[in-house]
Each structure stands twice: as C-alpha cells, then as structure tokens.
Image 1 (tube, rainbow, N blue to C red):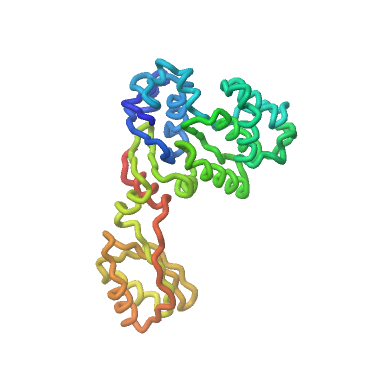
Image 2: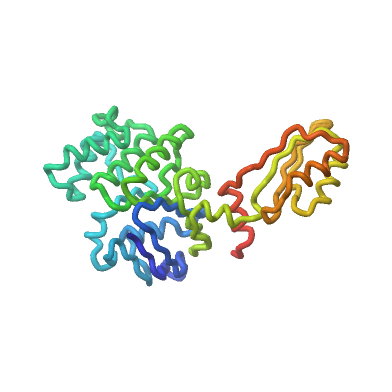
Length: 311
C-alpha cells in the first residue's frame, strides 16, 4: 500500500529526516510517535506529496508520489495539524466545496456528504457556521473533509492537539471507527493516543526511525518493563532488605504511611517468581495486603528507548 525508501530531507544545512524506510500494508493503523521537532510533520507532508523529499522515494499503491502526485492525492485523505477550514462557510457547504475540489462526481456528492456527516457525528451542526463551532467539532469537520473522497489512506497529523479531555475521547473514538474502512496513519507526541488507537508504532527521534514494531511485539520484547504492585503492612527497612535479596525483582518506588507501604517492583527479564517474593516478605513478619501485576505502558517503553538511544 505505502512504501518509503531511504527518504531524506534537508532544509538548508539542517537534516530533518535521515534515510527513513518502512512499509505500511492495507488496513494497518500505524502511529508515528515522537517528541516535538522529531520530524513527524515533515514526513507526513512528504507522504502526502505536499513537500518533496531531498532524496529517496515514496510509493503509494504502486505509484511514485513525485511522478503522479495528483493521482496520489485522490487516494489520500489528509488532516494537517491545523485543519484547512473556511470558517465563514457552514459545515455542509464546506464539505460540498471539499467534495468538488477533490473531484467527487457531482451525482455522488450529496450522498457522500451525508455519509461523512453521519460518520463524523456532524448532522446536528451541518447548517452552522464553522466559526462558531467548538474546537472539537472543527476537528471533526477537518476529518470529514479528509475522508469526503473516500480515500484508501487517511493521514492525520496531531488530530487531538488543543482539545479538552472529552473532545479527545470523541475524536479518538471517531478515528477508531474508521479503522476497518481504510489504512490510517496517525502522527502524535501523545503516548496514550498511539496505545489506544494504533496497532503498530514507528518511533521517530531526531529524524530517524528508532523503532518499527507492532505494539504487542514491542511490549513483549521490553523484558524489564513488567511491574508488580504490593501493599504491605510491616517495618519499611526490613521489607526493603528482603526485596534486595531477591535477584529477579527490583524496587523502583515505595510510598509509606506509618506501617503501611505501597511498593512498585520491576520484574527483571520476565522471570520474577511471586512465591519467592511473598516468602521473603512474610519472613519479616510483614503482611501482604495486595499484590498485582501492572501492565507496561507505551510511556514506559518510549522513555526506556529514549534513555538508551544517544542523541
């Protein structure tokens, strides 16, 4: 569906992208994750043919974006970080305009507009002027214009930036509802965004891809990232000494209130044994009130990768 081969981009003497290569299959939901300034937006603009690469190639559905950019753009829906909205238009008029410039056949425009209004939950504001819509609704209008031509690939650059928590959830749910209909590429620096929407992540740092994995595989291979939470009643110094004696557990946090302690441990190499842990702590005349495993988050993985990669 989409292939990037050795894509490099210079702005004057500054190298924004460094020899980036990857493939995205039809139906994938892929998250581009990186800190601000990592090169995500530059890469998005190259993929959508809005910006030429200095070197390298991008192939979409078998066509080179530099040789047939107009045909490629018909296959892509693009939501830039700042949606290109005409705020003096009503929602419906704007979507009609978007359908016209994207060459949606005139006989299909009415039905296609109704379709995206429903998909993006915009029926209730279709006759309202965009200027008076909330930020969340404006973002939905931006997504609606991106899918008005029923593209094969949907590219979203920071789709929830500037939204309040309720609007973020609404936009995320909207994106997830689109996943079975088209390939989705999502760029963000917000870690939970990737974890809740995408199935695969490309982590970009300083213009380079440092990770390209499916999330399940990424978590499985971060062996030292699994954690255990305990609530224990007893003497803090004795409990800490007992934990230090256990090879496959490492204490990373402890919060105490009198003789009650909330403890987080890291399982080393996925071989921590609860029996040894509970036996050691029990021998200090302490009482384990709660013990449970904490699932790794993408934030744990991301911070771990950034701490081990050189700048």
